[in-house]
Image (cartoon, rainbow, N blue to C red; front, side, top):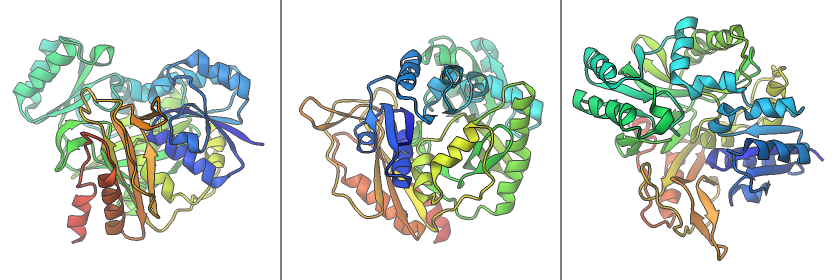
Length: 424
């Protein structure tokens, strides 16, 4: 029997487990640490995603054919390197290649080197110099923690006084610890965002459906940045010529620059883009499947996922074109009270009855002492509606998310609303 090992405990990992099990019900799946949703498809082992030695020992014991590393933190900590050293096939970049996400300063340097279009920015470790540069750029201005901050290290400052406060909170008050000990002050880019994920073996790459994420906590793109409050795929109105341009001007030169450094990137390269009047520019790179984009993309993938990931991990990406459902998927995230600052955990969750073409992916859930489902993280669930029309996918996602019972829950009611307005 074939066996695969998934590292992680979020909605992205639940979507991956769901897809692998759907493609091949005979596949034996192991997940560490997993969650109650993943447990419907995999045998969950209580080894934390941060426990590199424990994960390697588990792989040694289980001998999976492929290990799929979901979160960025174990990638940045070298899990793929350690697995490879023990003879395991792993899908995910080395720690050196994962620096494209774990250090925004490194990513910016790499983009300048590769002449990849991106915003003007400078890197700082001293508050006074950072504040001075922010005032030179003028408001609005973007302040980014260079290190990993779970999607919460970016602030779009509408005033210079706000920029001063954010700089001081990172460099003087150390609110994000080491993740914010180095920061970028970056020009604000006008346009609409687009998420383009590609599966790559370091040289060749296969684009997935373009998606659009909703980063702000509240309706109308208000409130603080989060790890993502919803997404949809594909993005209507994105012509093939634009995707070709992104591949030629952004993805290919970035992969080439990483190869030239001796750190080829194998895994999923996520390009968060801004579609500016001058063309697409990079907002950020991630070194793994996006969350919640994955929960919108994978339900539309007709092609089997495991062979795609295996071929990329082996450095021999298949040239077979991916097949997609002729449909739309819209994902609404249900977050806990207090998210993104200090999310409340331990609250009971009651899920609505199952609906056709609606998938509920567990992101921050656990099993309580009495066997009940409880909240265990900031983003608790990702509710994906799939439909032949964008409008119906929006309705299915939103209405099911609204029926989730969780005290103090937060969700956006406007995922995809800009697209709906355009279509109207």
